Figure: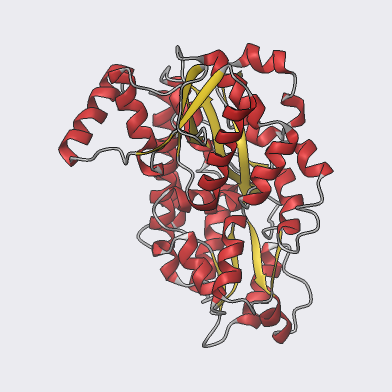
Length: 417
């Protein structure tokens, strides 16, 4: 299958929207605290943050507008599922903002389409890139150039119910795949499922499988390898032996978190954004977080957001806000308030907020080794191939080897066309 040209892609996206009759949710904010919007050069940003993260971000936009007279930033909320669609439509209609928040896995794809500005020279002149974690920075790059900067990161870890492990006579959480199976055998009861991941057919499923793939020594570029097949065989064996429910192929990360909070799952793979949910759903839940058990090496995967600047828009003004937003004290406040991890290692290393928190401290060593998915401009198609292989393997629709060989062929075709 040939790759879509930029124009063809835009036309298809416009046609899709027309067929669906969808429109942008229009929840705009002047962001200046007084609604004047009259000072300085106008800047605009689309953002998809919700809840506490949205509240904190809009406060920061207000603070920026009040801190200087050169620019006035207007922030407009675009729901996460609509961001990619609206960027494509905006490109065709000339209505793009100056910058936008973006899921880390989408940055390279839009850079390849020519939507985003190459800000490499600005980043180099800024001189702060060395203070960031390499993984989040890599997720903002395409062909060695910067097309955005990371503004908040997260990763996956092993959540375990301390009480259930203690009742089963387990002193420490498992650190290897063999130990995970040994502990699962002790934890299994009529009311407790030992372990769970989300294997749903979406980016969530790929996100959750990626640590197991990387821990085996494989990557998305060699899905047909024995190492990759071993990682999927391990997960399939957990279902076959009753240590993980077959329902995981339809369960989101939030679904798994609710089951864990109720005490029906003893261990799960999940991220820091669900810590507050667990505390709210079950204040008495006694849980901790550690590294996901390993095969060859500990592995985790990065999630989070970048801010990317739109090519040909007010790149100077957008970069002014972006670097102001990423100043250490402000970056620390925003990420700490919103349950994210700093993308800047100097912030994480010099702050006690994450180190002293009972739960977040478990993610500190995990963040050091977490890697981005891809990055690849074809990631959406690659991820879909992986999702199909996960579903086929864990449901038994195909043998693991055949499912991953098929996925490897799809990925090879995607990358060669």
